[in-house]
Image 1 (cartoon, rainbow, N blue to C red):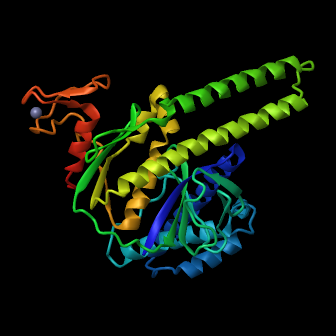
Image 2: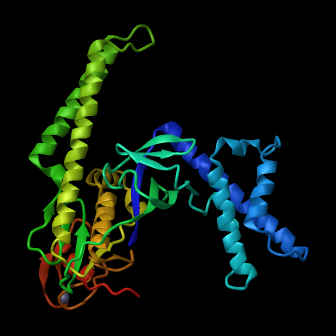
Image 3: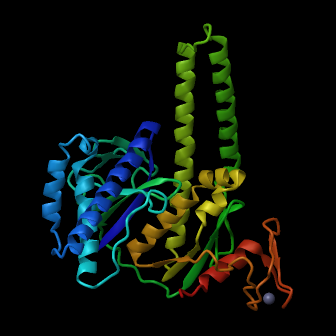
Length: 375
Ligand SMILES: [Zn+2]
């Protein structure tokens, strides 16, 4: 079975601009291809093959006007031309609508990577002409595997790499049950089939203590920088170098605690062997608008949690469903189906005006999610 794995990238600033530029090159090549095909079609010509267009672009890349394309992997434009040709061919044969031009504003930035050249190692991915980029999950994508259709995409907030990979499915007997998982800030996850919620690890004594230590180190570091300032320039003393190393180590440590916790929780949930798992749409952008919330969500790693859940489901054949963001999982009474018009975030208990049921807000939402019907 081929499954698509998706992992978030953690690029530095330089890599970040390279990512956007690479997506720009892909968009340019896609639009160039559509323009070519369209002009030719209007003049009564037949469909131009992807091979011919690639050859033409290779020659054009030697001109002053288009030599900028040489800063990006040849495979990016090659694949963009192929994608555009495939789309145009479907239109040409009457199977689909005419492909639209990709706009900078409306089309999500993305580009292709060569299956042979992409490499995964030590929690990093090597992207052509961009270099080794850190990944948010270390062991998610196996090293030295056979990868299919690698793509790099931006979702409006983060960059991700996706690759297809051959995996063996664990033969598991499923229970036939559909469960709902409500994720949040107060608790990490509330499952419809479990009594207790999984706590937010950032609220534990252990993590709070480490966070406090981190703040102390950071304060110390900025003081040291001030103390050793020479005129207007900052000097890195041995002490500062050591402090910076300690901070990096502590970051890593905190990161590992959070990732391990996500691994543990997702594995435990999947081990209940449900036939279906429903999670809500995190409505990324809506939630991210709130600065306070967005920091908490990032720390909780709710996106990573969901991705982990998804691939563990796929591995054992559990159907993974994402409820539509308009599905009123929180506002609906799981007992009688009555839907409230208002429910503020501060209301931690759901009290039904219709049947009088009183239930924990998140538990109620998880039960509703378990019953979600795909329309
Ligand atoms: Zn009710």
